[in-house]
Image 1: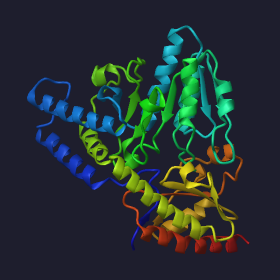
Image 2: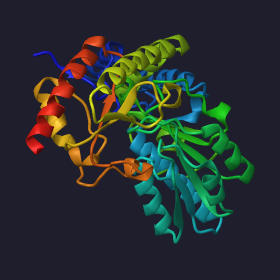
Image 3: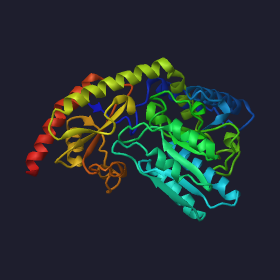
Image 4: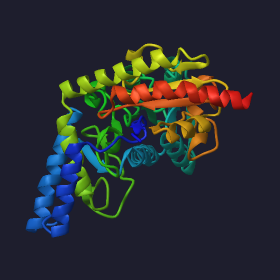
Length: 388
C-alpha cells in the first residue's frame, strides 16, 4: 500500500542532496579522514573547512554573516539558548528578568521562559491573540517594560500557520532597547527569511523541518550582541555553544541551504499553496469540516493548514487515515505526547479538542492530496455514525 505523508510540519523527509552529503560525511568519519574541527591536524582542519563552508551556506539562506550562525541540535535548544542568554544578560544588569510572549508560542518558548524567569525572581507576560491566532500588537507593546529581558514572537504558527507581524513588533522592541527572539522553525526553508532586515536580535530554526537531517539547527545572533552560552564547558562555536559539533549533520544542512535560493523557495511555496488550496476546497464541502486560522493564504505559512472537524475525536481520524496509508497530525496534542487540549487553539477561542493539521513539502504531490480528500470524509462519516 502506498503511503502519503502529510506531516511535514513535524518533520520533513530528508532531501536527496542531504542524504548523499550525510552519507559521504559519515563515511569519511568512519574512515578516519574527518576529525574534530577543533584540532590542528589534517583530519581536524579538513572537518573545520567543511564545517565553516556549511555555516556560510546556512548564513546565505538567511542573508546573514557567517559568524552570526551558531550550530545547535535544533530549534528547541536554540530557543532555550536565546532565552537563557537574554535572562542572564538582564540579571547581570541587576534586574529581575521579565519576558513577553504570545499565547500561541511553541512549548519550548513558554517553558524555557517560565523556568528561567522564575529562577531569577522574574516574571512572564502572555499576550492574547485573535480568533485567527494573530498577536494583539497593541497589547504586546503595552506588555513591554523597562525590565523586559526578552520578547518572543513566532514567524509563523506551528499549528495553524498564522504569520505574525514581526517587523512591527521588532520596531517597537528596538525603540525600547528590548531584545526580540523569533522562532522561525516553521519558516526557514519554506519562505524567505532575512532577520537583519527585520531588525530582530535572535532567530532559531531546525534543519529537519525543511529536509535537512534531524539533530542539527541553528541560532542566528545579531552581530555585536553578546549573550552567555546555554551549554558551557568548551570553546566550540567561538565559545558560544560547548560540545563537539555534529559535522556530518551540519554539512548536510549546508547542502540543503545552498539549494534553497529565492527561486526554489518561491517555487516550492507556490506548489505547497496550490496543493493545500485544493485540499481545502474539496474537504470543506463535507459538513462540519472548516478551516482554522487565517482565511487568506498570504496570511499563513505556505505549507500547512489546520482543519476543525466537528463531532469526532481526532485520535480516531488520525488512526483511521494511518490505516489507509495517510500520515498527518492532530492540532490537539492529546493525539500524541500529551493529554491536554491544544493551547494554541484554546488561545484562539476555538474547539481545542477536534482538529487536524495537514502539512506538505518538497516531495508532496497531488496524489497525496487526492488520497486525503477521498478518505477523510468517509472516515469522518463512519466515526460520526458510530458516535451516534
